[in-house]
Image 1 (tube, rainbow, N blue to C red):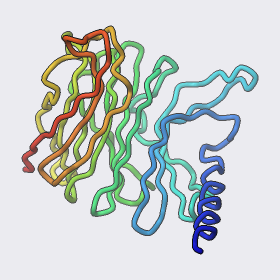
Image 2 (image 1 turned 180 degrees about the vertical axis):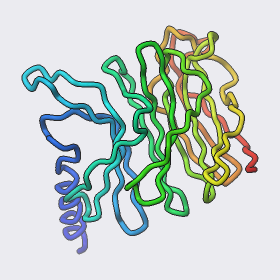
Image 3 (image 1 turned 90 degrees about the vertical axis):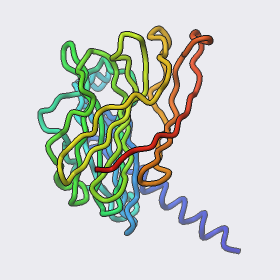
Length: 247
């Protein structure tokens, strides 16, 4: 007897979420857009935003990473806040889906993304302690800035701790999955750890997303794609659990 009210609520939520999140919709461009929901029901969205310079052909400018928030179930959205300042932009040659957002136990929002220069690619982390109104200065997570994808993901740990993973072919041996821990209290990054035992061939695209979750404050599970021998011509899904030490 409660099916109809639930369906009505679902329709209402869908209608709200279909409202344009990016300014200028539909004559604007955006991709990615992970969503997190805060305990009070507020919705936080992270997205890569472009500007359409020619509507008939949909020519796009370079993109920045933006955060926006809704406190009314998606009916309206706050003015988007650009994250990362002048740390870099996403260029039109970026074909992979990137950008990740996580909510910590203490209400801290975390965002990761990568930006491209003329001959470089850099993976970033930033965080907000006021529901996305302002964001910290970006922190470079992968040590390299080679002109290869750095597909970034983030998972919140205990208060003040965040885990950042990335999939990249920065090593000449091929694609691999990496992990670092970051503390907002001391601003420190742990040493990078290569989670994947083997390297995926660089000639097979491993995919632009991976699974990443915390089983406990000191134990994580990751899943990613990679074409590793003896089936190096095919992309397979691999998984690993990783123990971490919190400083």
